[in-house]
Image (cartoon, rainbow, N blue to C red; front, side):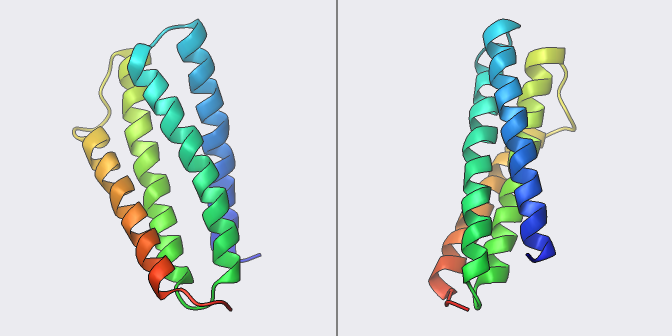
Length: 123
């Protein structure tokens, strides 16, 4: 399995675990809507990364664009969810603009995935 695929799958596993932990914290500790949103983003995108990693294994042309999109998506979700979780649990903002930048990066990642699908060809 290519290294990039392994990295995406490791990130998916970590994001999935963090999403479950954030959902549990939201239910039992508190944190409100921000923590619930962070949990949802982590869980949904963890599943997406697993699917994109598997799809990338089947592609020849378009794989790099697809993996760039998945990587941007992962980084964006980590920034977005991390900022929301920090606000909910510690009442602290991460670096200025982490949530909006992370959200924008996530959107860019999904757009790159769309481009990868358009130019993709089976290996």
